[in-house]
Amino acid sequence: MQKMIWPNNKKFAFTIFDDTDHATVENVSLIYDFLKDLGFRTTKSVWPIKGVQKPKIGGDTCENPQYLKWIYGLQKDGFEIGLHNVTYHTSERADSIRGIERFKELFGDYPKTMANHSGCKESIYWGSFRVGGIAQFVYLLGNLFRGYNTYRGHIQGDSLFWGDICQERIKYVRNFVYDEINTLKICPQMPYHDPKRSYVQNWFAATEGQTIDLFLRSCSEKNIARLEEEGGACIMYTHLAKGFSENGLLNEEFRKVMESLSSKNGWFVPVGELLDYIKMQRGDYEISNLDRNRLEWNWLLYKMKVGHS
Ligand SMILES: [Zn+2]
Image (cartoon, rainbow, N blue to C red; front, side, top):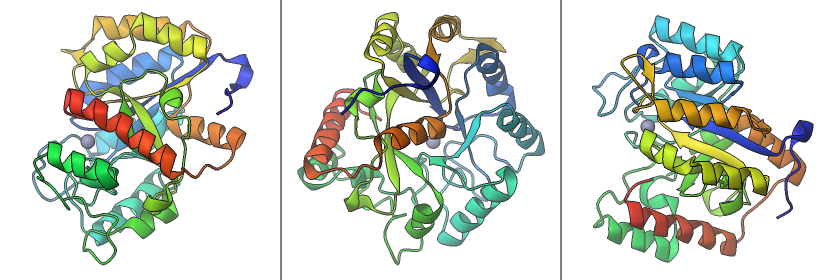
């Protein structure tokens, strides 16, 4: 894969996809103020509609007027608003359609980027369906065959099916997360189309940063220096509501890491814009069986080592 030439003589790219689990105005707005002041424009995912059941993992939805007002402010400031399924629990097809239309009403367009929420059984190609063949068997074995067939958003005829809507409306969906700061190095194919998972237009990978500790480990000084040197691109996958601030104060290590990053000659645009740029430079990419095997096994080995992602 050719080396990317970044716009405006930038040396590398860095962005964040923020999973909205647990997020409220109170626990994440100070983080966004900080990112904005440093010049980062990243992706904040949302739940457009409020669920009727009690969620296992909750957080604010766009039905909360105060939260929505704050999200509008982010959008105005140049942050991307992405989707994390339509709400925090499983949605039937009609609700998925309603939620995605609501997203368009609220934000002017359909979501460009999405990540599945594990609490939603309509998540698409999720759980054991993230991988295929022997990798799927190993995945299931690792999970003691629990949860086979749990996630069904891509299964035509199922009451949770919304694959056709996803294919029509959403440009990029996240799958694999790796313990590698240069996401584009471990997944040079991204954004890619997978003919075996064709309800998703394009897939992207991400770098491990689910919690503050993992985020800081991925963004060590050494790793960031390598990202810069390799001219790579990093899409951090994280939950900014999970330990990045406490009692109204930013985590000190996080503050240092982001300040140092912002002083470097990096391109700090949202996930959708970054993927559009790579796609435009490189053209469309359909993965081969060999590519898929490599992506799946690299991920599976990492997952077996750490037990999540
Ligand atoms: Zn989630």
